[in-house]
Length: 102
Image 1 (cartoon, rainbow, N blue to C red):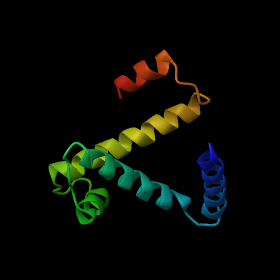
Image 2: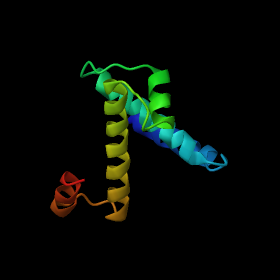
Image 3: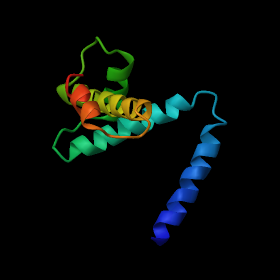
């Protein structure tokens, strides 16, 4: 519970600083890409930073299967977040069913 308070303050500080960045989407995109990479390493899907950014810059170009999987994971996280925002923060059966066809 003690960590929760300090985590909340740190997030509020990050939110304030992110608002000063001309394009805060860059920060979010980078963080989601790193989260996807770290999560997939647990499943032994390993890629390099260079492969990730090249796959992001050149989506139609050659990319390793691991980099493509990380990109799909990142895209799924963004879609889920967008749909959650549009639903007012509620996760309903209808939302989950609609996501399964995406």
